[in-house]
Image 1 (spheres, helix red, strand yellow):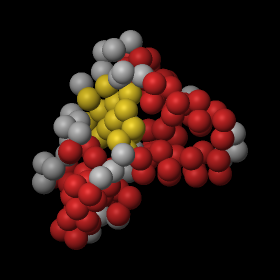
Image 2 (tube, one colour):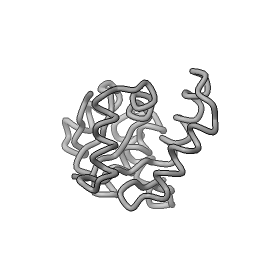
Image 3 (cartoon, helix red, strand yellow):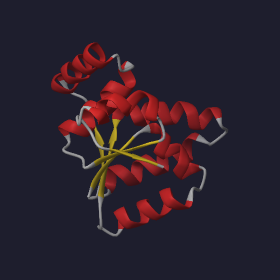
Image 4 (spheres, one colour):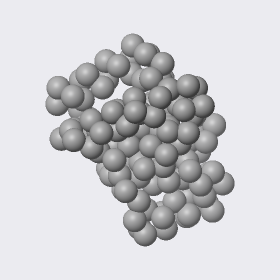
Length: 134
């Protein structure tokens, strides 16, 4: 299974959510893969630091993602940007969420891990992405 992480998932992991921790353990053991869109990383840095999480702890998390063969950080390119813009125009999706959804689709992820049903509901209903709510 290949997952795509919305910021929400990263926040849950840092909140010590048992489900998020178990999934990351499974990923590190090679049972699954996970893609973190670069905008997820950026938004996670902001929100986690607002919650008082030290930057070095966030760095450690994303460093392990970059060094793992099962966790990836997706750098957006022009194709991702064009796809995100089309999603924003077509479905009214906020641009950051459009980048997440575009990354999920382009990376051929099976599910987007999110708690943000509001912004991804239409895309899931149109079968653009599959959403797994926590």
